[in-house]
Image (cartoon, rainbow, N blue to C red; front, side):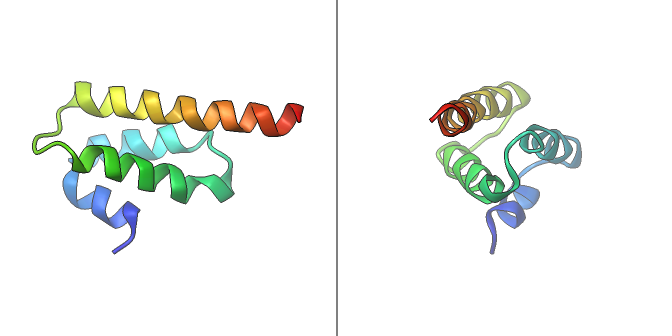
Length: 74
């Protein structure tokens, strides 16, 4: 099962849409890794609410944004 499938099963449809929108600014080759990282973080919690999902998305996006900036300036 792919990370995307795992997330689709765990999240309500409107939260899944929110996650896909959050993944859109990530470079296409990095999106699978981004979604995998989200799945790992969410896997540490039994209950997923909107606040938790928002926090995890923000934290993981920052890791990828920083990596993208380093590649473009390096």
